[in-house]
Length: 161
Image (cartoon, rainbow, N blue to C red):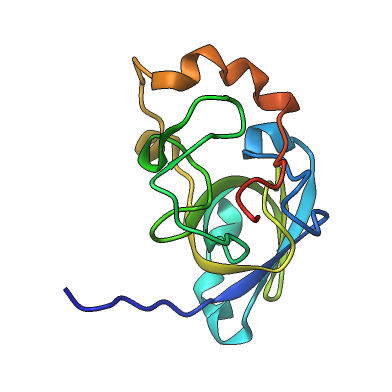
């Protein structure tokens, strides 16, 4: 298969200037504000986005230093396969976050619940639609025993060393 290349469409700005200390999921970042600076040539694509309360941001984990097929995730001390967790040290370091859209001014999106490091390259924006995106999950694997730690868990820098 041929190599796949993506070009950023914008930059995500947040209060988190480095991975360490950054909330690890939007649920753990309630109320934390940030902005998305969409590059001007993509502004036309924002038509009708303001009609959604939440959007899905797809981005590049630009500070991830290594690829690991097994790692210890933030909320557990046991090693798990990278595809059983959401850590950044992936074969393709792509992240996703569902954030609250507050408003749009030109090519700037004002967002909340930001769990993303400042300066992160944005790859895509999609509307969050509960009827499309919510599933009645019966199992959440190893996370079942640690998901209660989410609101207090922060990035400890382990994936950028």
